[in-house]
Length: 408
Ligand code: FAD
Picture 1: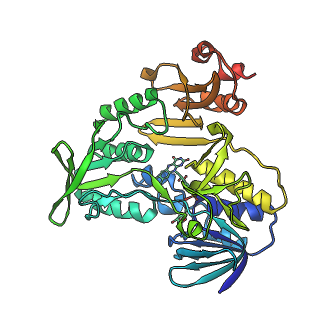
Picture 2: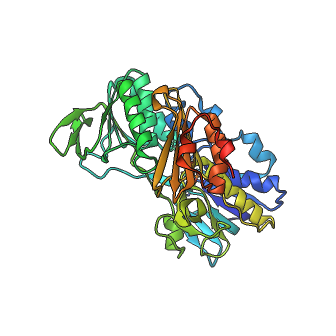
Picture 3: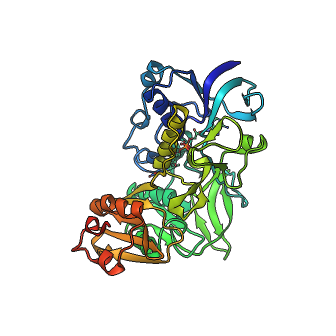
């Protein structure tokens, strides 16, 4: 058994960032990161972008090289999956029975891809995109695959479709709802991305439900829709969201319905246990005070910083501004704020020019800005969202007026 002042479960974005931030803030105690993947922490966004396309090597997506962690005396216990938390004993146990005693536990375990449950969901050739191992396996199979069906029109599905269609694959993208990105963006953005994908040759199908996957030669051979149509597929990618990885914490008594609940300092309801990143659900002023899980690198980094500050004596809570980006083809989308719950939106610029923004309002106040190839709006829109600025929609739509001029 090893004992550390801080044990971090999960060697992903949040886990890496909190370890680095603790050392940056001169935390002198012992730190051990326990992660179930075999690799040092790496960036996940390239997995559906330039790591999938082969433009970036694995070495280039490492968050830090090995020397960074050893110089800072951050222990990396990789290839260990924590399956049990015993808060009274301050102990976590891994699947192979290794025990780690902690002073403080930071749970940063992210989420696992939500799996399809239909017939054929476990056939070879059906892939998710969450880890390096997922993408390495997918890339191994790509040369033999001409026809690819992507299930799910969220960011990951769309990004994968963009990369694969650029590689010359025939791609069908299936979305159960009546528009892509329905969970995270307004209709203007959805329609814009649907048109872009179609223009790049992706067959985007909306309002479709998958009945099952069919087999050919021991692998996936097609996707059967509920209306009976079978789409031939040499490979299927499923991008239908994640399930937060919190089971051991919940089993230990932590509160949480969607992830694990944390307070403004990222403390769970269990003593000396924090939770950060994709797995944590926090009351968020940018979501109108609702408790939400935010799945983004920025959120993982911000919550990691909050915990490092709290553990080193800075107890002033901070409200992190939600930020996200997505790259598809030559389009750079940047979002600030959370648009869920908007009651009005304004389109700024003409989507036909492929450079525009959508500003979302709730009760006349700006709550989010999505910018496509419009960096200036993104940067200036941050202040409007931070201030929940009350601005006349007519002025937001006027591209002659810069957003910074509307800051109150
Ligand atoms: P993760 O980075 O997932 O790290 C959690 C780690 O914990 C994983 O290594 C996991 O295997 C491990 N783990 C889980 N359970 C256990 C356990 N019981 N014991 C030990 N280890 C465990 N965000 C953006 O902002 N912009 C983007 O463009 C973007 N693109 C993305 C593209 C893809 C393909 C994916 C998958 C995500 C993308 N995201 C993007 C989201 C972003 O990567 C996540 O929000 C971020 O990784 C969350 O960090 P995290 O540390 O909470 O979780």
